[in-house]
Image (cartoon, rainbow, N blue to C red; front, side):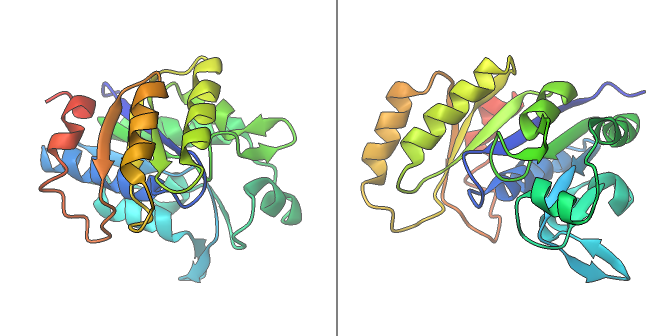
Length: 227
């Protein structure tokens, strides 16, 4: 088995840019000639393609990956309605099992040097009555990258999420500020408040760009990737 590194990408909420940040990291690692796979264990919000359900975020992650695995290994739990995954699973009479998530992760470990795992929603999103995404992150044991969507309320959300990650005993390497709302009023003051209060370093301040122009942003990830 190859020596595997990776990151677990979580966020302060849904729609803060977890997939965007994960794609950035995957693409940069791939351009360095590394074997990188993407893993999105659970996704809700899907459409049918070739007689199977697929999630667009998972497809976007796969498009950046240099290691191509079957969709079922990239996104083993996929639900059609864009609702909380534990509710979608209950409606479909499906039990989301940590053992299956870990088994699929092992497949990634056997084929890639780096595995980038993306959560769903925020850090504490429930997957069943007694399982949450924070349990998944703890079990997989990868360093955590927290994506903070810069919008009203982001300071409270970021501080609470960071505290929850640390309380879970997980290793959080830092946070990425993502400008999901270009017209966010007083962004600089909000950033200064986060700089002063967060216990972990800011890895990047991203101007959210769906075109994924990596040229100005690679330097911002220098600390994260180590070169």
